[in-house]
Image (tube, rainbow, N blue to C red; front, side, top):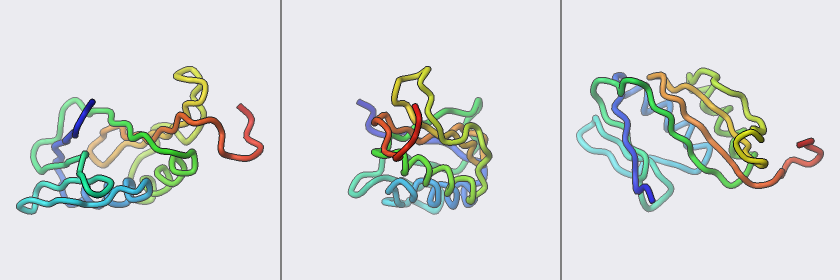
Length: 129
């Protein structure tokens, strides 16, 4: 089981603001900060996603956050796009991964592919799968 992951970002302030908005939509918040250049996000009480200032990871990485509902996937995408993310896959069913795989992909300010994914069956009335 993965305990936590961290990314190094070139523009710390911009990335921190992006993640506060995007991850806030799925229940994450800032839980720890160190020295003004390291921040840990998570669902209280434990941070499990960290960013730190430095030379951005190369190549960019892919991080997927599991969520409990398709509504949270939609909320993540909306918040991430409003916070300066770039579309890398609108919310939708991706049954080639798994029959109930509903995800959204956004490139963060550093070019990392950040995803929210729900593997539950449809919770959107009338949605055709």
